[in-house]
Image 1 (cartoon, rainbow, N blue to C red):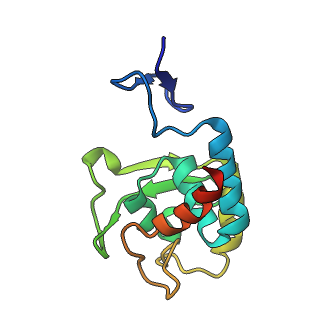
Image 2 (cartoon, rainbow, N blue to C red):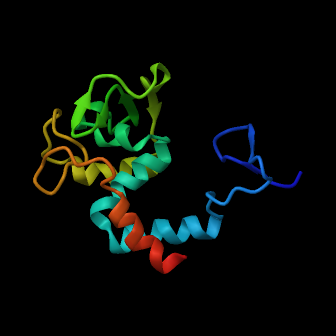
Length: 149
């Protein structure tokens, strides 16, 4: 079936109305962006990894604290979102309040960052330790995507 793509974690195919999905990265493009973040944007790599491996929205990953994750079992509780410079106690939708299990690969990235952190500390704060602005990932994404495209 032309134009059908499938998500690796979902049994349902995605069909774009025009039969194409220009927003979808190929496996090679995704690997290149992943490696570019790991190599050239290490400060952002853990955030990208948790977001990608957990299927989190940008606002959800921005509001995570170290108390939201169990680094032994991988259980991650999503209960808040970051929006317009503040943390809101409700995710974007009622279905957004959920728990997931992060894969071991994500936990291996997080464990060194968690050492010495308080449970109420943001997992991915700004450079001054506060909640980052909406769209904080756009600049690093542009920096790593430019050489890839």
